[in-house]
Image (tube, rainbow over all chains, first blue to last red; front, side, top):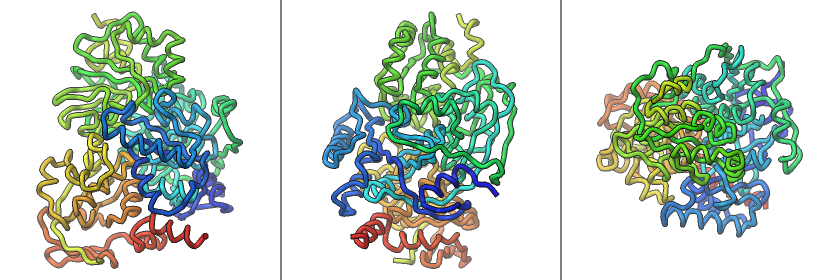
Length: 423
Length: 166
């Protein structure tokens, strides 16, 4: 009987022949990650352990991205502590403002996370790297501290839920629509403690940026990882970036899974998550008169090149609605530069959008676009919990970049196909 | 301290980490400063109402969302003695065990316990005694996790392992 990717990757990393769901293992970590919210706590805990070195200075990435460029004195102090730690332990992968990006866009871009890896990050969206076929999962700061000291961490082997997207993806429908639909079907705890594995012809056709978006939001269904088996598209992306050798792993065909969903997505409409849950998902045609104060295009979910291209395609020659503030945030410096070279930034600025340096900022209500009481935002981000983007009495809708861009022009949530009707 | 006595505060399903400690307060790692805003976006009055030793009782998927360890730290900092839930989101579950915040998974207790009720918990046995004398047994922890819990958290556990390795 075969085994799933999740089981096989964990087995290799823990020196076991094979593993079954429910087993507890200690696995070797290929890359560990912390940000300016979680690393400060991890550093405090690391200092209590009493070791005089980290397990491997090339396998720890510390990235100040949430409240950076530092939004106030307190956050400046937090980042200062991170910076000093990185220098003291001579960490190779500390990325300062001006060189950084949103962690989950930056690490794949730099080839620091690879197919077959076990990656932990003190950030819930670490599951993004599942798109590369890495067993990548979010943990807490104390877990990160333990890994920085020992290079190992305990895991419970998860059962796998397989999602098969069948048919062909309609034009304009993206990875974001697929993952919102999935979360809507499963619910916010539908994959709790499980590995999600996305497969089928639609996934095989999807570019890496779309795949990152899907794996990124696996956590929103409670999943531990959101895996996609590596293929030619993955290897094309990784080759030339990888800073160390790697060995891809995929599921055996006869691997038993906990559950399998097969969805034909040939007729899928753009999907929107309505406040206050990412599982509260509706097709865009079911929403009317949702008037917007702010639109955010960016984040670890949708701040990559393809996302910006889709937004720019809609915004070209248009103006953002007078009552709307549009904020566009390229996820890394490299994406920012590429968007400039392709003329996308010009399109955004001429449309009267604000374009920001990479930051998680507004996604978590940190800075750079906080909502006031009673305001409504549409965002390409990943969560719309109460108070997520600011005031506890504000609301966030979630969508793809194309829907976000069209809605910014219309001043209310619309299908991108309706943009011709906007006066 | 394996016996806890305290008053119950009830919450619903899918209480996320933004509700437990909103991101706007994550500019500190200090438990006492975080505690002032504990559960604020779920119930703005909670930080003022709750007293040391009180117990949170919630529905399914408690602590979903972000990996922020500030969430269990805020609860611990507020002096709350335990969280009982129908189920926990996995990162919150890890974090609570790692920092030594007692948590118990018991769907029956989570559904039955009433706000304001005084209950008693035997952590060693995983037993919850309600105000009418009814006893609920929580899902037991695997031996490996019991070891982390008995040492007061992951850091102490790792410390000992590092010492043994020397």
